[in-house]
Amino acid sequence: MQIKKEMLLVAAGALLVGGLFGYVVGDKSDRWDGMHDKWGWRMESRDAQSGMHGAMGGMMMGLSGKTGDELDEAFLEGMIVHHQGAIEMSKVLIAGTKRSELQKLGNDIIAAQTKEIEMMQQWHTSWFAQ
Image (cartoon, rainbow, N blue to C red; front, side, top):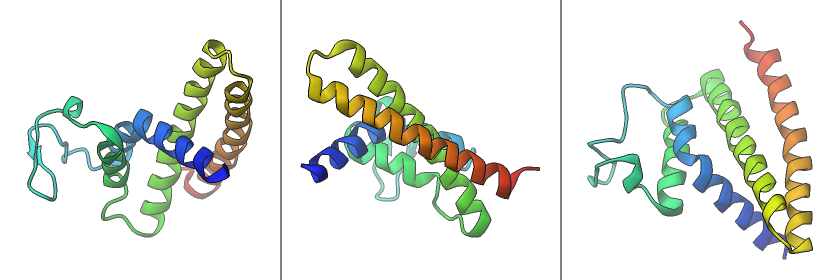
């Protein structure tokens, strides 16, 4: 059951903010609109990206080619956005579901990821404040 819950969280969060992650931390000159991905598939628009593959591709694009501090900072920035998306999704779930199991899951996500966001923000400030 724990694995299914983790897979659901990863899938939901990736679908919500995967493209945003790539946009926020990615190379601003390398957009997918009207371009080809690394396999040669033409990407007409972000709307054409669907499912887990597209979302995860967007997330990974933001880390591609980065190393050291640049990788660390991009990862933290992207994961903060990713976690914020999961929190927002959980709020919608809690407000709309009648299932106590999903209400508990939503509350657990909010509690856990809020703590992780705070931790990542502290690291980001400590390591990369300018």
